[in-house]
Length: 573
Image (cartoon, rainbow, N blue to C red; front, top):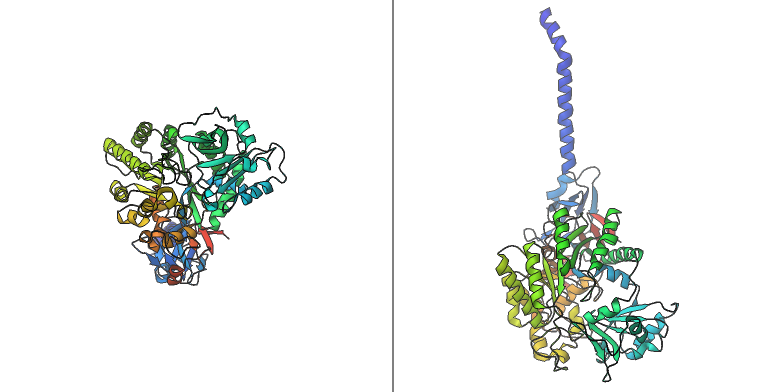
């Protein structure tokens, strides 16, 4: 008996030690498991529209490490609440996924916030006065830049250099039209650029001239490059400031991600976007200064550089910065009468618009891009331009075989009605901007006639009915970056002073409009597995509105955002 007692005494120390280790291990494992399933943030008492057809509406959401753990009712997520979980009680307020603006010129928009604002100017006198005001404090030789003028507002007459020469004798001036496809230079700016009566129109652009051959100061599409090339490039610091300024402005509007398609004009210098990537975006990313997510598109002619960069780094450079695809131009704009149509302009019978890029070159480049699995986006506004781009995409798909391409047409504003079904059949994304119809509705009939204007303009519902995916954007700074305003435009198709909708049959439903700014916009850049809906596993990017019920929100879409969250963290206000 004593022998047994001694044996147990000898064994007790290691056994106890082993049991202690086992217990600590189990406790540690249990603690780690508890850590994994405990949320950092829980949203409760909210009216959540998820943009996820599996669960369209919810009232609670759990978030950990910036991503969504679970969505549902409070009873579904209450077990994820721990001692340090932050509980956000929204008291019934409406929550939707963070808006994705599918088409912006982001750094240019940030820079332009300091330029002369000509949007809404209603007369020649007001135009001149705005430029005169901008001259105050300017040193001789300093460039004066502005944008946003729309000659349709004051009756259609295009501005000319002589309007502003007297008030800008010592300063070169460049003022771009609201659509970004035409601009006005004063005489001093033209002299600096070496423009004279002997300067010929470049391919894909026009220089407006008098009967005597003298340039009037107006440049359209690729001709703008003649002036833009002599405007001093914004400094790196200015561009970095522009990114921060633009990002804060976007967050104020509920935008948590943008698709930056680069500079805004055909014939742009191809290295601009690459400089923006290296000097601005990568700087901000490495410095922890990114405030919203950005997906970048690059000029088509630089596709091989993009393909190499994606092969080396993948498409996600970080959780903030993504490599998208390539972009090209096919035509101009309706406002500048350079969009390419089958029929001539009603008030300019010899003008069918401008094809700014050679078709065969564009086809060959797109074939090469597609073989490298790059996404391609092409600007097309007129009905003929859209058909030709769809023909091009069909040819590329037929040559290179079946795969998930998600080709994009940027704008797709004016279509032959039968063309709407082609988008769905070919699975081409229609990247459209609702607020552009506010600029076109009042003048489209004059430019292309009532029948063409009313049967083929901004066919959002027809595109959806034909099976197309539409992605909404703003084209900021051409139009304001304001998803709530764009959604309202898509729901009403009414100008501010109009009592009836412009082409009421093309009004779309609220959920379609929200999806176009969320899950469809994410799909349009191959990021629907990361963003675009409030679904488990995705980034917790969402917007909160003052509306306290879905009925209230649907009856009157609010004009302002209550709060914007990225990664579950409040980013605005």
